[in-house]
Amino acid sequence: KSSDFDEAMQKLHGIHQRAVSKFDSSSIEGEVSEFYDDLPVKILKASNLTMVGKKKWSNGVCRFVGCLPASNKEVLVRIQCDKKTGSGEVTICCDNAMALSSLLAFLKG
Image: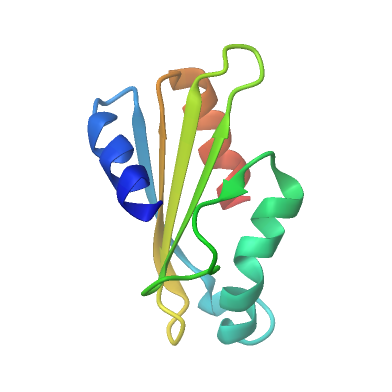
């Protein structure tokens, strides 16, 4: 559930547990609304994350959860995006600093 996800994210708030980065998709080729609609599917195809909830987006936010293969530590990803402007923010929570920076680089790439 989204409420369980949000609660788990609040617990991972340390500097080595959370990475936040803003993005702007307006410079990407194609329509911003197309980017918005396709983003959750692209993340699911390119990662071992699972979507939280039944809908892709809920009030401009989509949530994903997964585990690191070696340690089974939980990974939480929250993406907030404005469908009209294409600007947003990705937040990743994970109790492994090296994995955290790698995941952020992957999602931004």
